[in-house]
Image (cartoon, rainbow, N blue to C red; front, side, top):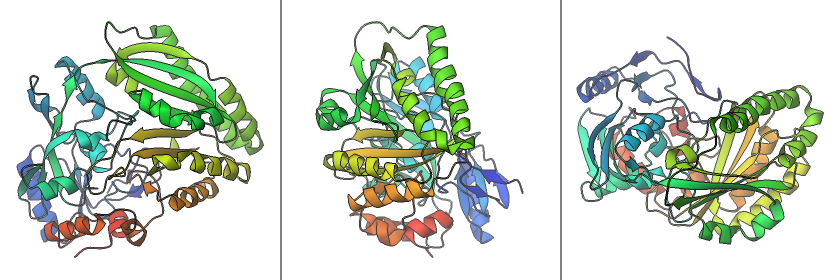
Length: 434
């Protein structure tokens, strides 16, 4: 069978069978047949998780690429039902055509909607939750092939678990989202010293709808990005400037700089400082999804942890110290975002105001020393790993960080006692079932 590889090339699998169902009946039959044959089943999205959560290992894979598009939309209420295999970029375009938008998004729009919510994908905004908090209802196929609907009023326990369900409870077939009227975001980007940003970060988060910053770990400079809703017409960057800054500088030229650093590691630290010094200010406005998302063609590995927001300054200063002692320097910047607390059992923002710290390394460059140091630092602050990004934790460690962890495992055992939806990653983070 054809080998499966994720976008970052950090996870692989060789499924024994790949099926592309065109409706729920075909998918349900595939699940029942796989279970009868003693095989596992994993849905295939776009492979944009950095962890192996999406790997089919050697089991059966369900290709959801035929399962796309909006099924039903109510512009008056904002409720939109979409098929699970719909990529976010397609969903954003279809919503825009209806005069609607998602209230918050991450900066990548290549994931499927079901993959994004199942792994806890989020954007930034102290008053806003991750994508899963915008879900009004889910429909999913269980291990016996039956379909189950859940919402806050219908099967509420399943709803609390399945919105960030890791693909461990069933195969999501449709997602009902509570959308908002389409809106314009005014984007402002400004360089600022790291110490200044950390000193006033809580105020920045409180004063802006969406705020994040990037920091090269061998420099002392950051790029702070503020996105706020605005009335009136959009004023996007001119096409030529957009191409030069986003496509040419942030992708092609940065990719070339990364390759130089990979070839000559002694240049990484000075290249970091040069890159940080070239950050400049820019302001523009556009439809929300065009501001939230950006094109990323330079491949990298990523780890991300959610920590209590009040711990952010201390954690970043420890990371700054750790970066100075690395034998293998880091080519990529660190990204920092925020989110509001929520009530989803395995959400990284469960019951606490959250700061997210994401670290990256260019593809093919050594990363273990940096990633291990990072995990030790955020672990001491009670960090919870993003399910779709690289981490070392197992079920024993995760149980200490999620108050509803055992409730999730109990529900999983009830719904999938034979482990039809398991893979090696889920065995590690949840313990084997069955």
